[in-house]
Amino acid sequence: MLHSALVTTEKGVVLMSRYMRPSLSEEKRIYEETLFSLLNWNRLQLANDGEENLVVCLKQYVVYRKHGDMIWFLSGNGEDDELVLHDVLETIVAVAGAHMEKRCTESLFLSNHAKILVALDELVFQGHVDNTEVASILQMTKLKPYPTKV
Image (cartoon, rainbow, N blue to C red; front, side, top):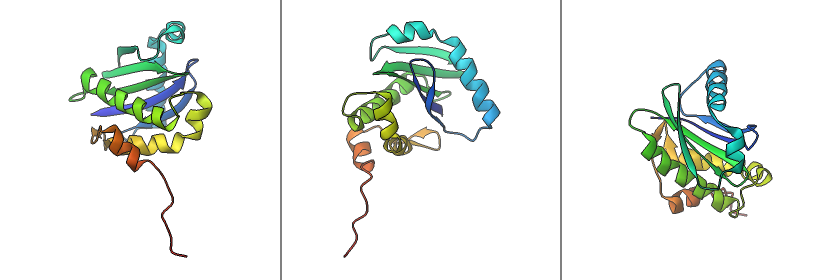
């Protein structure tokens, strides 16, 4: 089952955190602090885009990668091992890249934040992977207003 999806800057500033299960703020804070303490942030800043890494944090597999100016994290346990997390993270980054015109910067991420959250909701339902088709998710995340009769 998926645990969380996080997006941070290269310096560790959290831009998005989505937890798939109900959690207390204190549990989230402890998880994020523990995860960030396990990482070598200097190495991450120098990493190539697309280079994926794995760490285990509080019994959760965490797959993370640098994409543009940001670090994308996806964690889960049980049936969602590191291979499933890798595939889901690839889909999330592909959808986000399509919304941000392939340039992944902090300002573009923040301006497309709502679309990325809707894409994540289309991809994951109650912690379980539901849909990994990039084209289908992009269609669902267009966020165009409903046409009205005038």
